[in-house]
Length: 249
Ligand code: OAD
Image (cartoon, rainbow, N blue to C red; front, side):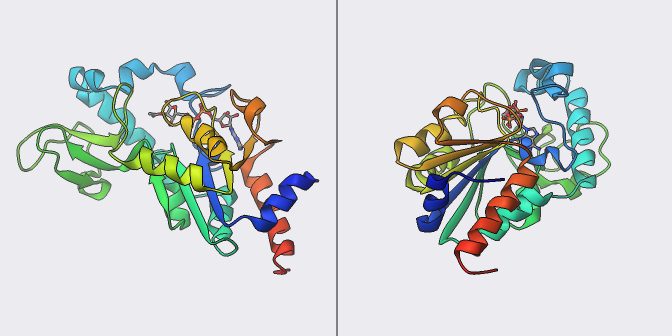
């Protein structure tokens, strides 16, 4: 793939890189996205699964759905997209990842600075006393488990519709976006707010914003450069350019 000259020049001088990622970066690991042709929200109703009232009404059903998703995630591995982002750390002063994904694949790939806007499916907490439990504590729980301290219901530590994002994480992410030289927006439909403010903040802060997505999205028209294709293919191509620029090949 031939990259545009202005992007090429930006890569040469950039120091701070931000990756803002969504479900699309994990698609090549075999994890379904939310929207689009085979998206989860085409088949399932978020209002029955991904909100607090639904959980309180039918905790076992919601728990079972999250256990099912955990099993899928447990069996998958990070893909070239996740690993290439880790490699960027060798070539730039600062590389941060702000993700909407709860699958922990950036963590498993080895990224050193990750901000999870929507939580992490591997963690859980008690709805009453807020004690945290990791997935190992709860392996094999088919029905919703109870807190060993207060007997409250245990829920996954993910952000559900209508809930606030984890305290401080969004603010910090906005700051990183504003201060970045290049923000890569990878595999997200950019329709869920407040997360979708991140590319807007990046632009406002003067960053060069590059979108990597299979298709056009809500923000394709307002980014500096929109690249179409799989993140697991495009990111390694960009890394090769960087290696050439830095004399690493
Ligand atoms: P979506 O499912 O809305 O969008 C996934 C995007 O990835 C689409 O734009 C696809 O075109 C693109 N895509 C798919 N495969 C790709 C690939 N191999 N390479 C590059 N792009 C690819 O997922 P998100 O934008 O992450 O929220 O969704 C945002 C939020 O909506 C999620 O975090 C979740 C959901 O409801 C919560 O759970 C709170």
